[in-house]
Image (cartoon, rainbow, N blue to C red; front, side, top):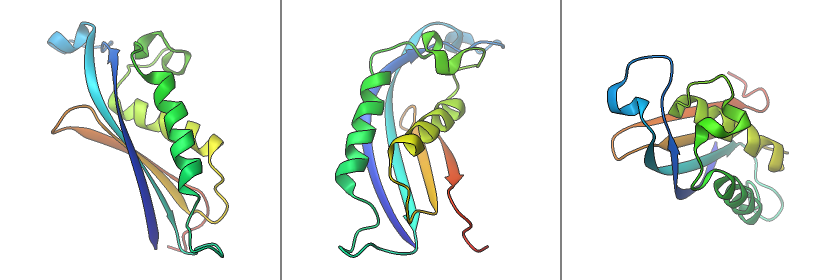
Length: 130
C-alpha cells in the first residue's frame, strides 16, 4: 500500500459548547497542523499515487477557508461542538470533493490542535479487500 501525505499549519479559533470544559468554553486559538494522507495500491503511469500539486492546491484552499476564523461561526459546525474530531471529519469530506480519488482506497485527515493532542478521520474510498 502506498501512502502520500501533505500537511499545512494555520491558526483558527473556537470555543467548546455543551459541557463544562473550563477555559475551553471561552473563545481561544489553536495552532492547528492538518495532515492529509492518501492511500492506494497502484501507481499511475508516471509512478504517482496522485498528483501532489492537486493535493497541495486543495489543501491550500481548505486551509485558506478556515485560517483565522472562528469555527463556531461556520455553517459546517452548525449545531456541533467544534471538537477536533468533528473538524477532522469535515476537512476529510471537503477534500474528498476536491481531489481526484481515482485509484485511491482511503483518505485520512489528522489534525493536531497542540503538540500533544490530535484526532483523525479516515474515509474509505473503495473496498480495500480486508
